[in-house]
Amino acid sequence: MKAPTSFDLDAGKHEIVVDALYEALCDSRCKKTPEEIEVMRYVSKISSDAHVEVMKACKPGMMEYQLESTFMHQCYFNGGCRFSPYTCIIGAGEHGAFLHYGHSGAPNAGQIPDNSLVLCDMGGEYHGYAADITCTFPSSGKFTEEQKIVYNAVLAAHTRVISEMKPGVSWLDMHTLAEMTILEGLLAGNFLKGDVEKMMQNNLGSVFMPHGLGHLIGIDTHDVGGYGAKHPARPNRAGANKLRTARALEEGMVITVEPGCYFNRYLLNKAFSDDNISEFLNREKLEANMELGGVRIEDNVLITADGRESFTKVPRTVEEIEATMNREN
Image (cartoon, rainbow, N blue to C red):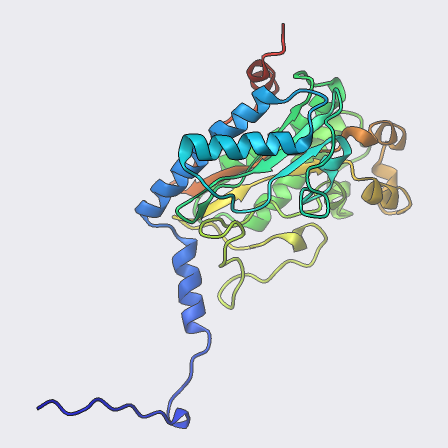
């Protein structure tokens, strides 16, 4: 007869390791299995297709929540994505300059103006796995020259970062690259003046991109594993201190790439009175375009053994967006 099982419950006789399970769970969620990758590729495709339908549906005079409704219907009707992993963000005009606009205090309730940028940050959820995609497009179907300058600055940052992504690359370095590229584009468009290197030394990038470049994604939109005892600490400088991870990229990670540029009245007015950075600002042009709002471009990207794969398949160039919206005629 088998002897009854017994346990020594005297904790004082054992070493209690409080972080091991947490670290193991974080590591397992950071690096995706082939099956997880298949699900995330699928939910990103469904979400990408829904974003395209939103672009086609958008017309000046619509309400922001109508675009949210269009997206959610498309994800469920065409892909079986019953839930969203986060509240949809539809920011038209100046609303696009507010991060996480669309929550219960500002529920996508604005009317979409003519000739405004519309920032749509939305994703579907499938079997618990999230997509997180942002598209920005003109409500009229055609970018103004000023909108085009800002959009192309962000697109250049987005393209440049993705082209550099592979195992071993520092995510903090990618954030810095995005900031620099956006400043270069604003300088070329006469929104800024002076030397980009000096702008970077004075941390001007955080005025226009006051958030981190991207985050790990999977079972949660902002997934775990960004920081920990084995990984780099959170940076101190403004902008970079909003990064949800400062780790080096590893094969199997899925991470968002979401550079942005925002003409936020509060941040710009504060910058105009800051002697360290006001000299770089073309105040007259910035104030004339304060209603531009914001541009964010976001892909979901898998780190592969020798590079990267973006799961996001939506129109990205000015020409692609304008053609998709079918307003050129």
